[in-house]
Length: 302
Image (cartoon, rainbow, N blue to C red; front, side):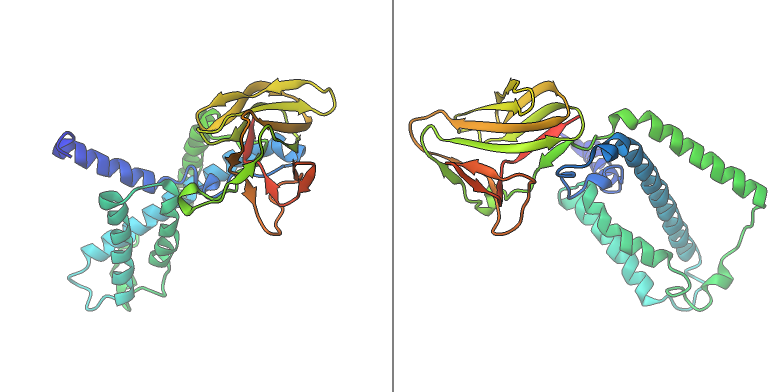
């Protein structure tokens, strides 16, 4: 805090508040993507993602604007309003307290801002939470139908232009993925793999992919390759700090991930395992046995 100074701290607070209220990535919040989306959907996926992002942004901007106008009107007329519904006061204090908590004290992610949606909805609900004479005190300014129409068209044009310009920077949905896993901080159990043991799992790509990764702890020594089951072409994985990766064009088709323990002693590998839920379309094969409720943690990106 000493290195930031007062101006730096204030700027950091503004930055955290903007992250909290940013809804651009809400579509990707709390989801790793479709495990194996069909090809026809993946072709139109970017367009649908752009449309959803535009609707989300426009909706939240209008919601924030309406909420701010209502709060300013309530503040401006506080001296002339006999009593204010305590539910309105409680809702406003809850919203401000939640925003202040994440801005001033706690970490901030855009997905945390989803909690604000029902709070803002309550503030914008009329007349259920309005005071008895609040509507009589508000000055209603009307606009002609023509001005309203041109305003809406202009607003939509701006957002469509901005959204189209940001299409290439929007995160693309994965071609195939299995990202459900327990974090090590929650004492996730690792699976012991025997010396020189081999694990395989089949995956299906319904769209061309340009990269692939299989999560792997930094202290493990495993080799890996990806095999096209139709052409039998082999793609060698490259070791990165936390994963095995491939940066190569991968055509549509069925592939098999193959991992091998390189040591002459067992190593413990973190896999996704459940009791009776299939988290991947194809089972994990280890020691000649199929494990339908186990899977690698992998992702293939376009």
